[in-house]
Amino acid sequence: MNEDTLIRKLRRRAPLIGDDCAVVPSPANEDLLFTTDFTIEGVHFTREAAAAEVGYKAVARSLSDIAAMGGRPRYCLVSFALAPWTDQRWIDGFYRGVHKLLRKTKTALAGGDTSHASQFVTDVMVCGSVATGKALLRSGARPGDLLYVSGPLGGWRHKRVIVPRLDVGRKLIGKATACMDISDGISLDLHRLAAASGVAAAIDSLPLLDGATLEQALHDGEDYELLYTAPARVRVPGIRIGSIVKGKPGRVSFRGKTVPQLGYDHFQHRS
Ligand SMILES: [Mg+2]
Image (cartoon, rainbow, N blue to C red; front, side, top):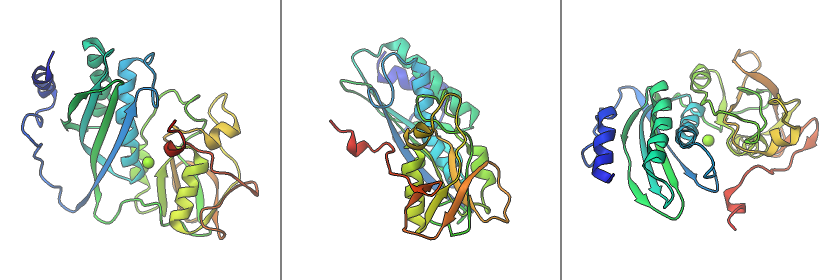
């Protein structure tokens, strides 16, 4: 197969593909959301992983960011660099995983790019939308707000399938004061949310995935649950884990003890 055959094949399911750019109407009264995420062999998955799982996960990671903003996914660009070991069957499997989640979330494949490299690399860019001015940001948490997660945590060792929490994100519009998704471990991500809001965060308890330890729930990445805050009088879905307090901006504590930021930082894993 060559690039033109691939495009012809993709066009059957994705009519937006075929010109130099995809042309789409801009939605009225909505802000656009853009996010992009790499999924790289050896960093985010190994060769032993099923191709469809890699495709699914690559899309799920970007959709989780749209969920974190309270948005609805609209369009998606999938680029990849083929590796010497990725054959036709593997690419077909990869796209099966991609299409499965795009179909489920009504997201249109609008294009992408192909190249080759020594390892398989894919980049999934998603464009979503949200009512004008209503996007959920990280910066609105205030002392006295309660702190929630959308599901149990445990990190990549225990998380079987990523479910982008698009439904939860949408329900938080107009209710949550701050929101983000947990991709790098709650110790690091909650620190980011608290720092963006200029507040401190106090965790009382964490819901754990089956078999996960508290340490894994705090520091291992790839939970892709939402982390959000809301005033105590506002009812929101999810599990309450603590509250926002006055204190050193960005400080995270668990039952009174400061939690170090041991979550996943790519700049610390370069060698
Ligand atoms: Mg994110």
